[in-house]
Length: 114
Image (cartoon, rainbow, N blue to C red; front, side, top):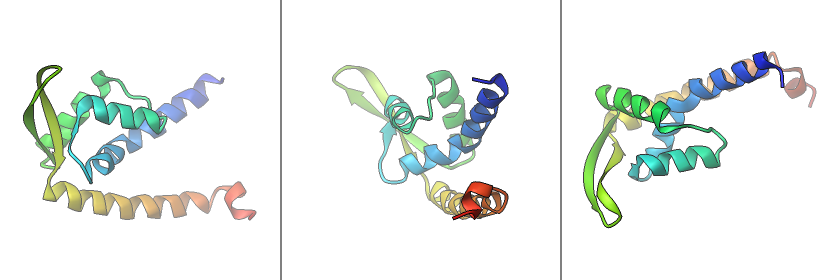
């Protein structure tokens, strides 16, 4: 596939990754590997080296918090939780996302031909 297309697709995925992480954590606390699994299931392939800096940035921004839980399968695990600020931010992101979809659709000939 064209390298430019692959680059454009990667940039689009990166642009929505923070939104997706918050949405994943909206209804349940998760361990980082579970977040990666959910992203992979949605075909937003992410590696730990990409995820952890995003989680740290979101935590530092007050959108996430975490707690340590003992694990029967090894060392304690860090479970991430959406804060009240994170929930409000996610709500605003959803509104912005819908506006962006509508704006892009005005230029997408395939959408307008229906």
